[in-house]
Length: 475
Image 1 (cartoon, rainbow, N blue to C red):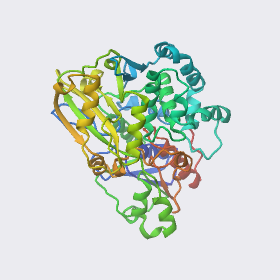
Image 2: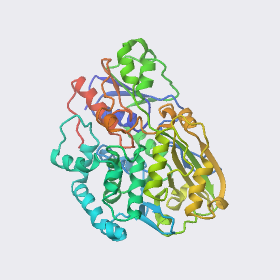
Image 3: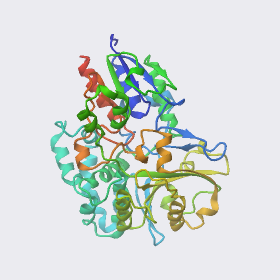
Image 4: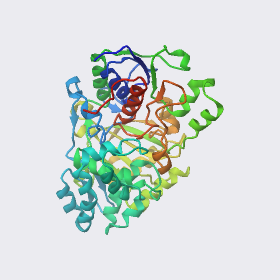
């Protein structure tokens, strides 16, 4: 298919790449502009500690990428991408030396959860029965009629509750802690309305499609998308910062993989004062402080399950994790933060030279914090893996403000593109901007944060409609 239309994409994160691929597939001539010397946005890997040790600087584990309705249409494996699926998607160590985990098999998981196994099955069964179609609705703007309204309504009855509200349906503190670790990915207080939704979707992904990561590093996800984009005839221009819309060529559509605040800056006086204010009025999530380590041995967990898990949640009880998330939201530095951790070298030998391992961990911190949380993060690991500090050969730290310096889209270290409050989930920034032919395709738009490409897909659909192209379809 070919057409005379042209589009420019600014920003090569997963959503910018998704928008570019969607339009290029429709025959639009696409030019992708990226300010950095390396494309990928948060899909970046660097040797930031010791030579030969590959660390994922931004996105690292992909529960929604493999399951994404858009990514599932892409032949990324033909362009060099290999997904690695750990034995266990996620584990949660406990203070008694044991651990819980989400296993791929739902029956094995319910057995592990004991008294709470049947409640878990009741939550998961309707999600898994309709998982692909449900996810397509869940990753669409909410202010539209869903393709499967009854399934979405049933899901919404649980998802719109707070994580605290559904946790009390569990009988054991251990299962409540497991739920807290999942829900805390949303980076909002666990008492907040709709904070249960993210945890339930991630749990269903663990059972339905897994929590994989990319062999050789997250950069390889971007590289595969770039390879496909070039095969489709797109032009990729690196080291081309855009300070103003005037820096870009005239095209039929302009799609920006930037936050609304950045768009206001580059649009300048093309926006009215009220339009600029409305776009800038986005509540941000807490930031993150992230540490990458090179280790001499695998992390010495006290229990077996974390040794086999691709992702590990650290934070003890539901109450402790809830306090950590509440403090970060309120601008308070918590001494025992909830930590997300992964040790990819356990499953991917390409991540480190023989005799070494790589790991990363991050915690949520007040937005814009300059504080280094390394000691707190390592303290949480040591709590569940005594002797961890003795294995550290090198580390690299990025505070919340460092994260923004590394990638300007991460305002104050916010990796979600804006807080996932109920208001902002429903009224997520529109893909169409007040400027004709100009669209936003970043994670600040619906459906929000996570590497799934659906923000880019929906923006491309809006642009295609306005260019009077045939309707884009996920097929």
